[in-house]
Length: 107
Ligand code: SF4
Ligand code: SF4
Image 1 (cartoon, helix red, strand yellow):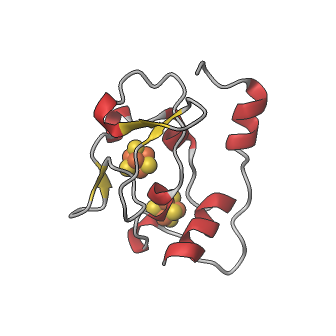
Image 2 (spheres, helix red, strand yellow):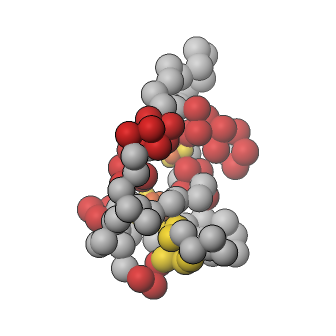
């Protein structure tokens, strides 16, 4: 898969205002967003052993049986490839809709 188009980027980086009254912080989270599908685009620095290819031939971060990304350190709940994490993970923002819904589903 090539780099995302401008339209795809816009769809994936939709910035929203956090819902009022909800205190959202990664410090009180459990890496809920790391249970979401993380599609890969070019992301050449992601090692192959952390990648799975879906039936449509698209590359995603592999997830383990418990649903979390295979790159997540379960002791620290931190990303083990943070410096070279996928583009989609870099674009993900605390407080955006997907963050809120991931927290609601997993906390
Ligand atoms: S789901 Fe939101 S609050 Fe939780 S770790 Fe991810 S960005 Fe942070
Ligand atoms: S690559 Fe890192 S930041 Fe992205 S989903 Fe996996 S553990 Fe989370």
